[in-house]
Image (tube, helix red, strand yellow):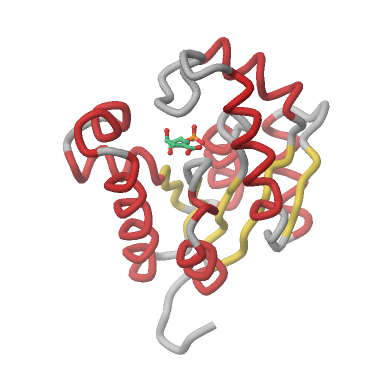
Length: 171
Ligand code: S3P
């Protein structure tokens, strides 16, 4: 860790609908740490929703905001940070997370994520309109990057509380 920097944060990564936000809240509560949802932080800063950002400014603009938000965390006290599923796509983001804390991968197989995604909605990259095959390809393409995390939790059959406790025990 660099001298003078706060943290280390705990970054929760994983595909859409893996439970990053739910687990993050529980874990933060358990540790007595602040919880930060990076997607919500971006929405608050820009005063608009993620679907709106994608629709009006495009995905690249959103990705720039993600990197910016990660950089801003360097000034914060240790927090549990739920990231967006696409955060691992940029080398820069993975480096930033490694520098600022520990990276945790909430791992669930595609077969368990798909029904959740179909039930939840509200995500520009997983609306079903583009076809679930293409979302699965995104999952496959990202998986090697998720696996670069410091800690992988196999979330199959675990409740959010159980996932949070598994993280707390191993960190
Ligand atoms: C995205 C995941 C979303 C959000 C945005 C893009 C992605 O976050 O950041 O819609 O590229 O996987 P969640 O993983 O919390 O759904």
